[in-house]
Length: 93
Image: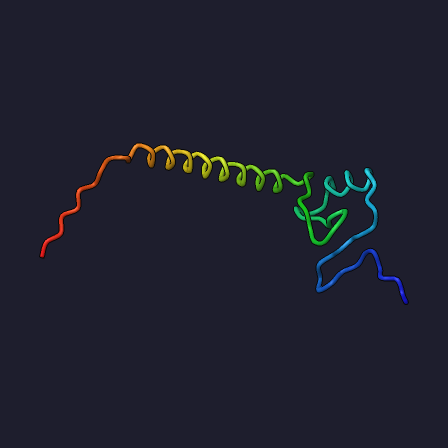
């Protein structure tokens, strides 16, 4: 049987299943002069290039949205605990 290749592309999506080294892992996430997305050092697909300012903007926006969602959820939980009063319902015939 023929061995399957450890690296390549399937439908335009890169994959790499070679054992990663520390140098390859570090250099994969920091590639000055490349775009915002670069090939993953291990696995399938793409990852963020931390040498690109666009990646930092994306991480900042994602962090701000997460912070906002988390605060709004805690405020909604606080409002639900305050509404423990009985409710009167009137039905008309």
